[in-house]
Length: 82
Image (cartoon, rainbow, N blue to C red; front, side, top):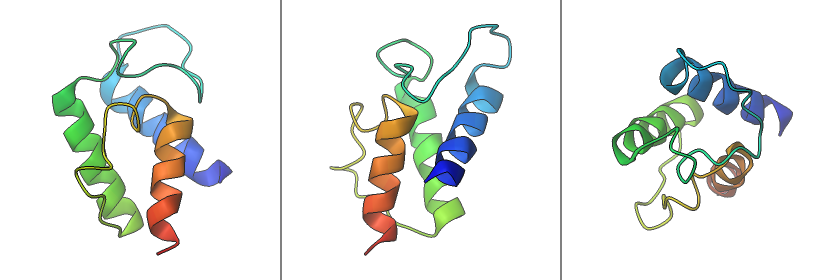
């Protein structure tokens, strides 16, 4: 689980927070905190599907599911185990 968390955290930092000095944690509110918007969420979903060779159904890829790194990891693990 740590590996997925670190991969997601680094991706978000690199792609969406390169000019910000704020500390990002596994529980930082990404969407409701304004770090990730709906367009970015789609690119993050595609990254996860490609990286982990999974398919995340749109009805599961909700703003709530993508709001923290920990939530994203739970979603990815759900589909890795299928």
